[in-house]
Image 1 (tube, rainbow, N blue to C red):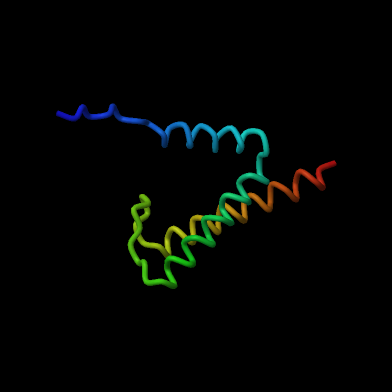
Image 2 (cartoon, helix red, strand yellow; image 1 turned 120 degrees about the vertical axis):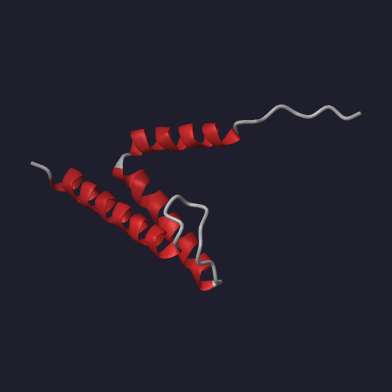
Length: 84
């Protein structure tokens, strides 16, 4: 009889690492992650994906959300560079 392995909460470690990078790198990390997300969802949408497992479900909404995050990141970077 094979013993079942205990649940590995790997996602929690991944989320914590992303949060750490976000905290350390601020808007730059947000811009990178949003850009990667946009590229991934755009590719998936072109391949025919219309419904996502993301909370927003519709890939158009997910893309709009990620674009808003990217815009916020760019605004934060500009503010950080230009601030008096």
